[in-house]
Length: 78
Image 1 (cartoon, rainbow, N blue to C red):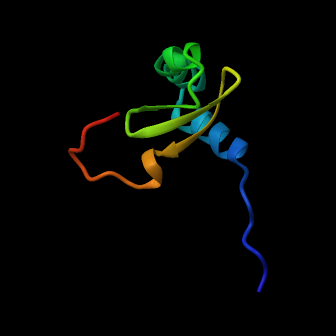
Image 2 (image 1 turned 60 degrees about the vertical axis):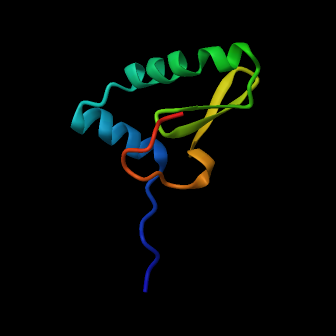
Image 3 (image 1 turned 90 degrees about the horizontal axis):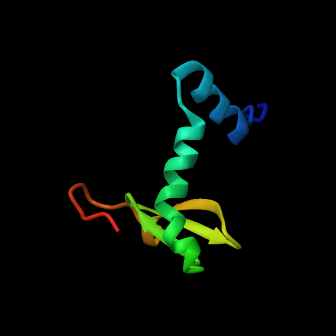
């Protein structure tokens, strides 16, 4: 049995951009806008829109589920 083909995050992102019209720069600006105050305050993370954005030295480096868990529908955003 052969290993399944791996697909990089870059390939997935470009697929969404080219085939489904995802505006990557608009998403980038949206995230930056939501995280700006936290970055100014030198926060380690910012929780918005049901996810945690991890900050390091003024850069959003990853996105996690808030508290590492999924949220029930209808719960309040952070």
